[in-house]
Image 1: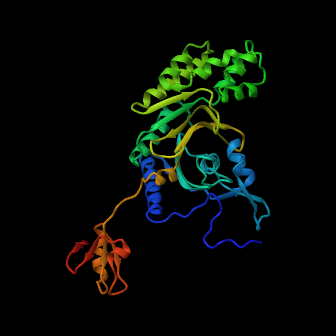
Image 2: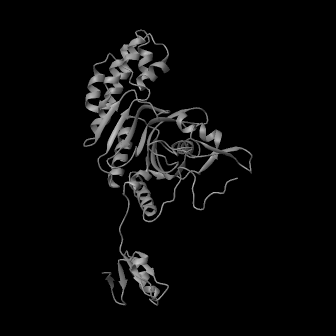
Image 3: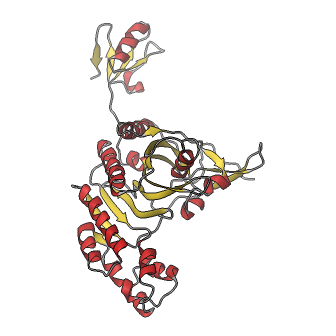
Length: 373
């Protein structure tokens, strides 16, 4: 067996060093405090669960990200969570099933995936989110989506873009258009739409779906294009609901792709992805979905998840605080008073301690904190 070099970490994992580690905690606290101010109560699910229970509450994509191992105590297979949304759904459907709806819950913590993506190679991420359980109406979606936007804006994120998608739209349309669409296999239609293969749809006799490809783009234009289609009443009403969501996102760039399904395995009538200037990859996603209860009852819900690591990498969350070096022999009461005033007070352990060694901006001279020149 080859020895592992000291300090080497597994692929996709990393250490957070100062000041980025503190920035991550600052962002985590700030995001959670913001959603808490809107009535979302914090829950803290465990890092590990029984694989069967955890996998049953995840979409197909997330289930493939489970890192599994055998519990030496129970001998059952356990799994590390790749996402916390399903865990919050479990809590809502079991331990909090008696609580009046709508139920507003928030969470924050680490998640671990089997492998990263090309855009985001990290396997361990810090996830923050909020779930509104018991409703998936337009009002609920607007509350959750605008909350995600305001939380990110408050954290210093600029240039936000919201990409909307309609995860079940193609399937519902296929059911309504079964007559004029010779391609009977929905999976084939969806694959061609995923590839934006207009020619393939025409060759398969399903050109009726081609306008959906052209409808993708800025939300205002996409909604106009979709409104021109001969849609059944339920889907016409859905497009009208999406328009209300877009109107609520005043001042935010919004796009719409009615055929996008990647990563939206369990979302229902609407889903969304969040991007921002200067941040690599997506910084959040969410949408409407169902929480499944032990008796198989399905409860509507809507929520979002935000990924803190991208914000830290973009330089957000770093708070510059004045640091004062307390020379050897300084009374502890002095340090206590300065810390109460908001200083970071570092007690020297040697007579020749240098401020720069402790990133101190000031030195205590016995009376005042004097700036280091």
